[in-house]
Each structure stands twice: as structure tokens, then as C-alpha cells.
Amino acid sequence: MGRLLIVSNRLPVTVLQKKGGYRFFPSIGGLATGLKSLQRSWESLWIGWPGEIQDEEARAELRARLLTEFNCHPVFLSPADVEKYYGGFSNRTIWPLFHYFPVYTVYDESYWEAYERVNRLFCREILRVARPDDTIWVHDYHLMLLPKMLREKLPDAAIGFFLHIPFPSFELFRLLPWRRDILEGLLGADLVGFHTYDYARHFLSSVLHILGYDHKLGEIITREHAAKVDSFPMGIDYERFSGATALPAVRREIRLLRQQLGDTKVVLSIDRLDYTKGIPQRLEAFSLFLKKYPEWRGKVTLLLVTAPSRVSLDQYRLLRRQVDELVGRINGEYGSVGWTPIRYLNRTLTFHPLAAMYAVADVALVTPLRDGMNLIAKEYIATRRDGKGVLIISEMAGAASELGEALVINPNNKAEVAEALHLALQMPEEEQVARNRVMQERLKRWNVACWAEKFMEKLAEVKERQEAFLVK
Ligand code: G6P
Image 1 (cartoon, rainbow, N blue to C red):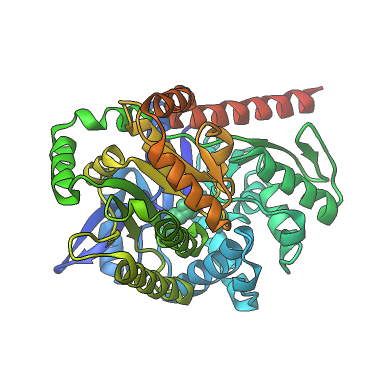
Image 2: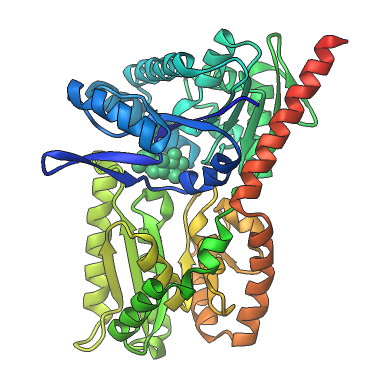
């Protein structure tokens, strides 16, 4: 059996320069935990960017350490590539466009050139390490040209691609000047996976309108190659979260939180600080809730946690200021000497405090304007071993299609969110438990190991079919 080469922009470990030396930190995102289970059953190697390291000597030393200690093969990027490929095409072009923010989308030829250049660099690095029977699984929007580049060099390789963000409707996707290249790039894979059926449908529709290829049950046959398109909703490491409240370290954190929050009800909001998450809209809705239902004042606390992200980009810095201001305004307007409506933490949480927050939250308020999946919602439900707690989730999150027992809202409808908060805070415990148990069963079954296995099984099946077809 060959190895599994996992390829993503970011490695599961990020290297940071600290006090004269280098330190390794787990990267944010569900991908690293998601693929851990596969790393148990496959011999694997992860290829990606370890963060900004420019010193040549340090690079050589890190290359060796990343390989021996973490099974990672680093792809180092120059400052210009970080700016134009990562900050530019990936996060100023694709990210906003695919999340339905066309007005934030920048179309810049130099960003595109850098995107192509870095995809080619990844291709070269993969070719340095790939063996003929390796399976290659490419992840996410930073590397959409890579499947085709790899296919040209390794015509028989099994290549999978998974997109972790939404694929937008054709009407949005068509705006992209490089739309053909992106579609052709993706179709170099044998299997192209999305979180939801709708994203897959949007992709197929773009392929038909732009490249003129129709599909049969998700299979697209181009002049060069056949690719299968399917949906694989990503799950979580269910046991890790459902077992969290039994850990002494988490219990300690829970006691501390309860002491600090007093006897108020807790509404929890956790995200990367990203404009797609709808944080200002969520705060406005909370403010409306306090206005419409004054009886809750002094009795509810919104615990707002935002993890700093992509801080070199203007939109993200602007959002930080906007959130800072809104929190100040709402606390000033509704707070009293003894009660602060919003407790605000701008930092990345480690597992124990995160699980403790899930455990003490009466309500989780997950209201992105657009989100590929959203694992926070799933983690919250999994952590609640007692079955209590109410999830309010945006219908614009991929996760909503699997969490229909939650309170599903439109994040732009502030009155609806305020109403859902009122309802959630009064929901009888038996109803909370009844709703959550159904979701827990589902999340337990469709966990992240299952997601990865299903993708790999399908990839093997597609490959076998192709080979049988060639032999005939
Ligand atoms: C999203 C993307 C990931 C990305 C993560 C963190 O979840 O789908 O590919 O790694 O955000 O963003 P960053 O820009 O810090 O890698």
C-alpha cells in the first residue's frame, strides 16, 4: 500500500520565532484533528507552509525537525508570496468571493500570478517526495490549480481535492476573471469533495456554464480526464468533546468560569475574527434582545470570544475595531455597576478552556453570514454530555443542514435572532435534551474519522472504475 500525501496551505503545526528559538504551535482549524485518524491507518506525509521563516539556516534545521518530529514536509514562502498569494489571491479574492462578499473581492493580476507560482511551487515539492503508488489529497481554496498541475506530471496518480469553504452559486463564481483556470485546475483531481450537496451542485453548474461539460451522477468526463464530484460533510472528533467534561483540567476551568460569571445565564459566541462570521450583526441582535426583553438585563451574559486571524489584512483590522466599539457601546448602554452584558476575549483558546466554555453555556449563538461548515456548533452539542443547552445556528452555515433540531435563524434578521435568544433561554430542559440527543447521535456516527474514510473509500472506488474502464 502506498502512502497518503496530505497537502494544505498551512501545516497542522505553525512555527513561530520566540526568544531566539523556534516553537511549534498547533494551527487553528479542524483539518489537523480531522486527519489524525487517517494518519493512524496510513503511512502519511503532510506537505504545507509552516509559517513565515526567512532565515536559510533556520529553514534547513526546521525542515529536518518537521520531518522527524511531525511527519511534515515544509513549503517555505517568500514575503512577496505571503503577501500576494496568501494575503492576496487566497484571502482578498477567493475567500470573499466564495463567501458571497463580492464588494470585498479584489481582482489583481499580480495576485493571480503569485497564486499560480505558489501552486507550482507546491507541485514541485510534492514531486520531490511522491512515490508512484502514493495517494495525494489536496485541501482547500489556496491550492485549486494544484490537481491539474499534478495530473500533468503524474497521469496515473490517485488525486483527491476537498474544499473546506462554500462553493458559491454560478452567478457569483462567474465574476472571477480566472474562472476557467480554477475549474480546470480542480478537474485534474479524480474526486472533488464539498461539505454540502448545494456546494457540489453550484460547482457542477459552473462547470456546465463555463466549460460546457455536463455531468452524469456527479461524474464529469473532459477531453483529458474523468472526475467525480460529491459531498462529504466534515464531522468532529466526537469522543474528544463528549469526554471533555470528565477531565479534571476541564472541571477546574468550569468551576472558575462559574465563579467569575456569577449566576447569570450564559450565551456563548466563539469564532475566528472574520467578517464572514457575522459578529457585528450578532452583537446588534443581542443589543436588540436586551432592548426588547428588559427582564433579561442583569440575568444574561454574552461570552464573546474572537480568535485573531489574518491580522495583516485591512478588512480584518477594521472588523476588530468595529467589534471593539460595538462591545463598548452595548456594555455602556445596558450594563450596570454590577453587571457587564458582554465579556469579551480576543484570543485563541486551547482545548480545556474551550471545552469548559461549551459546558457552561446555556446557549451557543453561531450566526455566520456564510460558513463552509462550522465545527463550533458541532463541538458545542458534542460536549454537552448532560444533553442540556440550546444551539442557535445560522441557516448560512453548512452545518445547519445536519443540525435541524437546533433553532435555525437568518443572521441578517436581527428580530428573529433576538426572538430565538428569548426562546432558547426559556426552553424547558426536557426539550433541550430531546433536541440535543438526536443531534448527538448523528454527530457521533458521522464523526471526522468517518468523513476522512468515506472520502478515501470513494477515491479508491473512482480510481478502480477508471482502471477497469481503461482495461476494457
Ligand atoms: C479556514 C480555512 C482554512 C484555514 C483557516 C485559518 O478554516 O478553510 O484553510 O487554515 O480558516 O485561516 P488561516 O488563514 O490562518 O490559515
